[in-house]
Image (cartoon, rainbow, N blue to C red; front, side, top):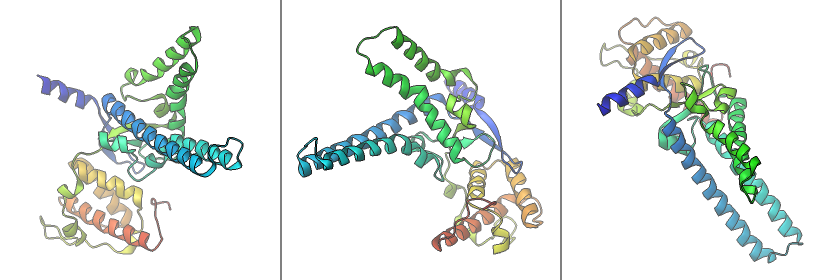
Length: 296
């Protein structure tokens, strides 16, 4: 009975992500518990780094200037500390969520990541918006309550504000924060199966289909139409191994590159395209060329 209840909860979190190319990809919205665990881990990491940097700067101040408050060196180190705390607080989430995995260390440990609800790339504006809203949702009311000595009427207002935003994900089916709503993002589960377990990259790179014996070899002209974002989308499709998605993606790629690969061997076709596209992008990056997506 317990397993059945868990399955029903998992099914309620199933969604379909439609990419700009019109491909429907099955995904699972992250559970509220997974998001909470991820936030706690990220805050623990961020606070640990801030404490370590603060201690190092304090020791440096003691060693170099002896904590002379009027010393220009002391003032300089204080400015460095303020800038460092600001960068760690705001740059931590931005740095990791704008990366190729779209996830902070805490999110990766919890098996979740950020995704754009329109199926496109995560934009810098969206990531900045969702993280600036976290200040209004959590840090601002917490900081205000902590700054007051006694718990008065204004504290109750701050607590109500905090409670409103903390409980916000419980009142919508996609467990969206206010920041997600503003930024057009949601948090989804990462596929649990590693891609290397689902395909042989060496065999795929050679373009050989074990099922039909077909050979899939793509030239630079065909591989150059896609970039890193499309590679990540294709990797997600191969990990999920949904038959309908495999067919749809194979047809879309064939139409884009002018191929007619036939039907019934879509996975082998996509594995070959994925492996050869990844090899081409990695080769280009070694020579200083980077293609973020098909538009770049």
